[in-house]
Amino acid sequence: MSRKPALLVVDIQNDFCPGGSLAVRDGDAIVPRVNRTIGLFVRRGLPVLATRDWHPRVTRHFKEFGGAWPPHCVQGTKGARFHPDLRLPKDAIMMSKGMDPDQDSYSGFQAVNGRGRDLESVIRDLGIDEIFVCGLATDYCVRATALDAVRRGIRVCVLSDAIKGVDLKRGDSESAIQELREAGVPFVESRHLAASLPGHP
Ligand code: VGL
Ligand code: ZN
Image (cartoon, rainbow, N blue to C red):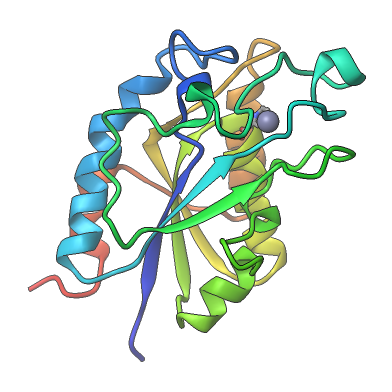
């Protein structure tokens, strides 16, 4: 049976990195590892997908309007742009989420492409049978995306050294990792990934 894994790069945007309005401590430290992993998928001819948090200025996701968060990743702002060192290929598949002003949406499966097609449809259309997840934040989008994949029967694996969490409460990222393990999600270190992807000699 032929395999077709894809890489899913989650929300590596300025606002989630040091200096941003919802900075994840050392959020940018994963960028070099993510770039190396992107290179690996590109060389193997495997798809790279990227999600972005993409909020309207007014949304119940933000504190000011009843939510949990300071304003971040507002559509069209610098904070919403991908980290300047992130090297996404030109044909990366871009998916946006968080546009609904009435809803918190953390899962990448709530993201849509430029034509409004959702992540699961895009994955199934491309014949992708496994997603490798990296990015920000471990305790929100990475967690929700990986759990959602399990629920939808899509194989998922998390890159243990290419994720970072918000840790609004201390230990949130650790609990998220524990929860994912209990849900049966495997973790792999990015340096061990090359050997487990198809196309390896
Ligand atoms: C996220 C907090 C608020 C995420 C999004 O993508 O992990 N976290 N909005
Ligand atoms: Zn958000």
